[in-house]
Image (cartoon, rainbow, N blue to C red; front, side, top):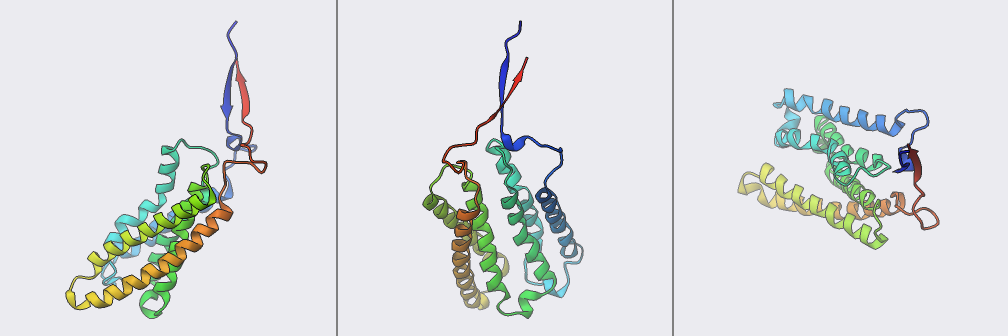
Length: 220
């Protein structure tokens, strides 16, 4: 007689009706929208609203937002539940940034750039905080990780933007002032996003402080 084996399956992976959740299809829609909105600057790069915006670099970098969370999830063991909220949030900044550039909102509305740096920093910090919240870290550690990494991303982005967009020395002072303003709004947004992640993150502990009991499936 063969021995019976027990296989541990995460409870969240078991599906009652076999359907994917609505948040999955929302993510598919956002990622498809990102691809579609990148077509205008790709096919018509000479439009006035795209001049001096480094759209060629955006076209190369922005699609990565759709694969970062899935890759990280698989690389860390594909532990359920899938981080749909973090995945969808990460797609929103590049998607809306291309929309605003296409509509020329950054040039037409003076404060639009500052407002978007604030919102985008919130999104980046929230994504990092949500992913960190899947591990047994304290709230202070999760907040600091979300704040620090999101601000690092902001600084790296600003450095890249400086080298791409600020080509001549005559505009270096104006570019420097804009960078300082962007980093300030980025810091405030990162703090708000990290705070949001503390509330919305799915932690590995259940309400009573213990992990959910696994479902045991026996095989002959």
